[in-house]
Length: 298
Image (cartoon, rainbow, N blue to C red; front, side, top):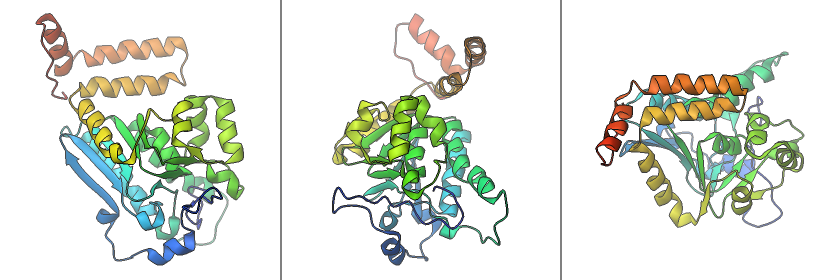
């Protein structure tokens, strides 16, 4: 489960390969409590691209409470920073994100009715919302296993690149749990209800190539090509009309829950707003003047 109190990390079992992720016990023995939060969730901005890197490879990048909060804060900061025009989320080691590890969360007393729902609402759902609501394009560069909330973190991104060794696992059913962290919202919208139920009912590992085939992944590349491809895509987005991209993202996400009239009205309003930006004026001027546009993100 991605955010139930006292739940151990979602390390997916696998009988397919001796390379299966480590058990919670083995990961726990490798954890270094002296590591700073900044070293566990790396952040850097390069060429107007914010890179958020999950850096807890010994635990397959399972997210603790404070690490999740840092990711949420970094996404909010990216939205507000004019110097950031695209975001990449990736991981180190063999895992992209094996799920949630709440052992680093705030202390809890006796559980009362409503605690679980509140924990999920304020935890996993806030993380997924932070990606969906980020005002810059967000690319997932999935370097390895993405399980539970880790899979949903990738699926919430606007574009998904995956290494050919990556796997996606709806691990919840293996624990007798209901999917959370937005899974039952995201998956039917991405691949339809029947495919979504298949993944959630069986909990089988979905290889990157199959994830691409059914539309969960935009492109699969070799492990060596993942970072360069993510950089190329992100820097291309970072030179684009940033506000137009933000409004486009908003329109597409909202369209999945809208009727035609509402969607058309939102489209017209977005275009009205966008035409007040410098980039829209530059785009029109460059067309008239037959030259390449130079967008500034404003």
